[in-house]
Image 1 (cartoon, rainbow, N blue to C red):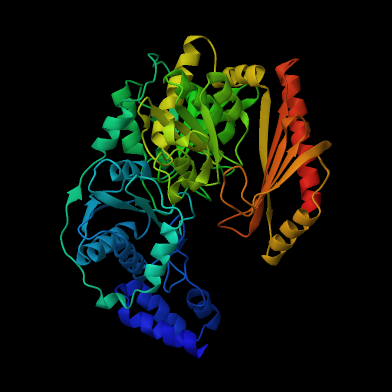
Image 2: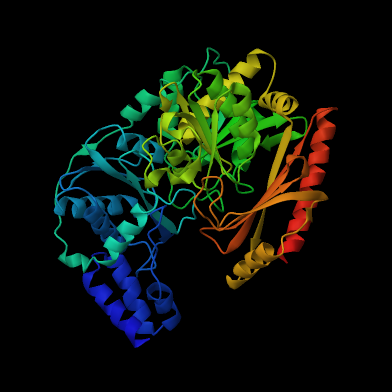
Length: 557
């Protein structure tokens, strides 16, 4: 413990933030060894999502010292004189972290530029790849994490998040950084005052001619509202009705327990307003507007569509509005297999990637190299990525030039969903009718998830080892036809800790440890032909998913 106290005292000497200095001094004075160990017994790891963690003092927290060290490590990996664009959201500390990043990069001989106000993540990602002299981008955000968190995403010159080995190289450079109070710091840098460049790009999306659709929208206390409203105005849609209680950016997210539109209860205010206004559609962004959630009215009231359902609808929308047999659509190994069928029907190319949007983008990267290891496509070098999605409400939509943003884009996706709904409304249909039509054409692909949280991480390792050694022969009453250990190179994918069970009839189970939480995540899919009433098929699929859930739970116990 004396070593931790010595490291804490050294941290105090260099920390420029009076708030975290006071926090750490109080911990030291109180002799709170547990709190000290929690902050100094580990450090936030810089990985392919950059940094993300709880605000506070010490290397295992997000704070100004951690951010300045990250900026110095990034600077060591970038070419001298390169231009770096920096964005930030409205969370606690985000603007300060953006300015600290700019000061460190400037002092290292780079040319930083900072947005004047908080911006959505897709705005920063698009800007990063818009100019030839931009070598990297930094977005200070914790996306949909709790209010106590913040984070630090790094984008490369292609506008996509970094992948190995770049993340490891930056991490090693961070480890080599000395005291931050000895870093040379620059002062003064260009400031950008808006999202005009992004809005110009998203305005080029082909959205059809129908605009009659009533939408209730929530930015979930985040930074998406103004850009989304401007995008809808440029596209000629009626202005969405914004949930007033969640309209303004608020880092405390007072109306939701967890600012993620996937979480139960997060959409309650939006759904209530939509019901009162008789809206056609609810659209929600997460706080940095890189994800998009959709809800629609149905016979039994409003229901949120799954990420796979929206992904399938958007895929066909994009493919109807683009052309060429070199088009590529990509999704992850844990998303629905529906996209493969859609691609085959439209005679376009399909690829799977590892989990995480950075891998979706790399699956369509024509330049190859280490960045291209995240996906499997036999014609990747000649392909044009026009659509990518992951089941966790992440979508990137495009036109004939390709996707507009090399990352999740919740605002572009919202425009495309609005266009789909307006098209359907013209014909007296809804998005639910479009889903039924897809099920009749491709078979019903019903998906669900199961998460198994543990207190002891060794239980995750033990469960994965047990399933590798003795995989089940049947799950949910369906025969296991094949078993893939994804820790071995599979179908052109790099190794990852995961297991995939392909079941009779096209059903599937994928099990993997979470990359951010102490839990196993299980992705379930049942595929059924629609040869009877669609409601009856959906009921059978729901029963099939429950049977899978029960057997997977038992296998992990």
